[in-house]
Image (cartoon, rainbow, N blue to C red; front, side, top):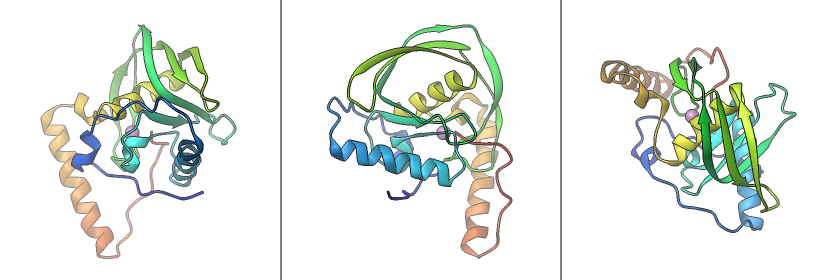
Length: 180
Ligand code: NI
């Protein structure tokens, strides 16, 4: 398995709309394994292919906190949304920044699984939030898009400063809560 490089905001490649996978083959399954490897190494709970500069509709999540519930959604589609939930979100592509976002509390999703077969599932709570966040990535959208322009500008400035500090060899503070 290979650890891939995660694109960071405001990299314009994060704005690419991913295209359907349609066929699950050996190359795609290698990519699934690499996404999990990359997500776990970064202490994330979700990762979309878009974030590693592969623009195909594929995402992985594991909200168990102990790497025991890996899930794969290929060509995911939200069929139904219900309720609303507001919580703190972070993102591996916006490191170190967290803010409140409102999402549907429950969703019904259709996707292809690792075996290439279609399935439908009702998701709720953190798993539902995570899948909505990752599908946004596949559409070129980031959670900071839900914030005000002023906040987005502050995030950009802070990330650019932190990138400069990293380039200078100074360490930055580790993430507080898992990012998706
Ligand atoms: Ni994210």
